Image 1 (spheres, rainbow, N blue to C red):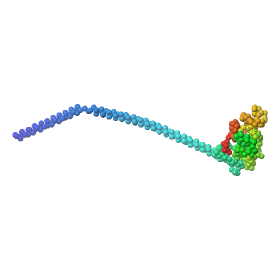
Image 2: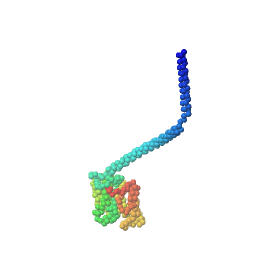
Image 3: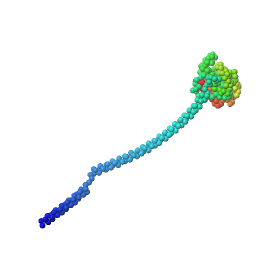
Image 4: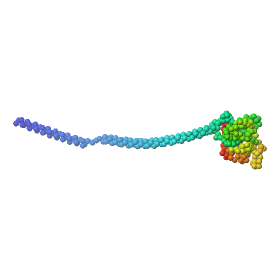
Length: 357
């Protein structure tokens, strides 16, 4: 009996332990649930989180703006790059055009140099020799051509100098002084320059003129390929003396006489004529009595009228006229008058540099 009572007490204690433990667990659960249900998140934490969110949103917006600006910059750079490429292409095209133009000019220059070389002074075995300077640097464009060639060589007193005061001084000087005058020496070189470039198949007639006109040398015309005759003509030129006035009318009449079949005429002078031959037509020029040698001076207007009259009387039909005008003080109308004359015949007018020929 005693043994059974001990077993009943153990059971009761175990039951009480279970009940107590279960109740404690339930109470603990209820306390935890109630704590979690009533615990709030602090407001300052929420505010901080909201601020961080706003900051993140602002950073995102700023980043988007940077991305958009970068896209614009990239687009602008791309457009600039396209413009640069287009400009490079334009410059390349301009360079090509410039190079082509340069090549064309080089070709033209080569042709001119070839022409100058072809017109170079003749060698020692040729008929006429010319010693001078400046020709290689002066591109005239003047070519001696034609089958029957006439040369008018002004040998008036003004052909001794450019300055009027020096011309007057030499007029009263000796023949040697006149022949040695620098302008006259140049005049002879010009004529010899023309003679040295005659086509070998041509014939030439040279007429010197001042107040009168006559052929130079003994022959009316000389064959360019006749060395002996050309040398005699050159020596005859050396004997001429520049003096007196200028009668272009007589010069044109004489050159037509000695070379009736003339095709090309080369005139070496320094100004408009100062003398004419008395005729009814010329006498009608009012206030120009000085044309007949009755006065020591003549106006520019009278000289121009006399020039036009001389050309009208000459009637050089079909003749190409080329004029080489040397400098002279006090005759401003001469260049235009001679230029008009040469141009009307298809010829050339030049007023060369002092170093030529």
